[in-house]
Image (cartoon, rainbow, N blue to C red; front, side):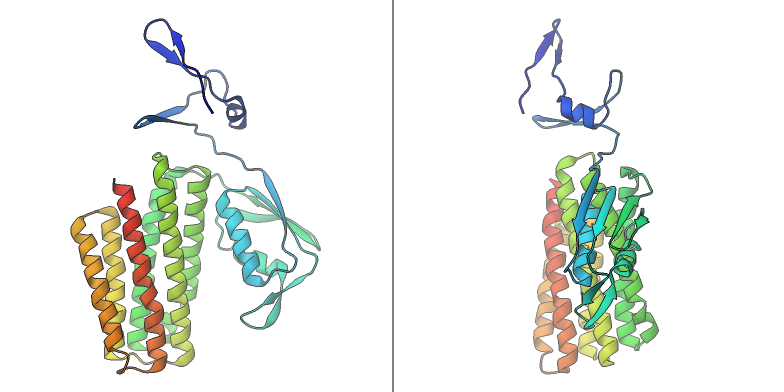
Length: 313
């Protein structure tokens, strides 16, 4: 939309705010708004949190995982109230080849969505509402906490794999769920409020998405190690530790950017890929499977590095 500049006296120039935008955010005479310079652009923002209102969806026919992903996506979008309709009380769990109660699936996912609770529950629908106010103040703290938890969880996977510690490997699922909760909430904050540097929101959202995907890999590998009772070979353990090191270097790079660290991550990536290739004939088929699975983590780290560059310049 375009606005004409109004000249007041010799030094003051004004433009009007779009009426719909001002009404949506409850802006009235005397209120203060934030104006941020971004090159040839001005970013106008308000302290109020945008309200997307209520969204209503029907999840009839969806399986367990699809219902969870659907609900999580609406949460990330920033909706404060979600009405979920379902014509059948149960849904398919494809992985276990069983049926599950829809409300139990919803409640399980809500345990990973910070600040959302069930307010109304009926036979064929429920209404979920937010019980906390979203604020940008917690985003930076939350992001750093996510990095620390991921580094810790991958370290636990390596240690559990090395020592055959089944109890430690069994904790990976809960740690995955905690990180998923923090990632989803951080993405919700970016969608609803954003950071002061608006152009960086998409890059940060993408980095969080890569972290979420990496944690799925870690979770699946912990499951496979437990299921197949895998014993770590010397070659496999070395590769696991190198992948863990790659993520730790990215964590450092994210907060202390340097070209040298970019180079180190890429050099290490090629060295690990070479080790995986040379390990093909030395380790079991089952162990090779989890290494190839974890190999994808290197590509996600590289993707995050490329995205991190856009935050720097």
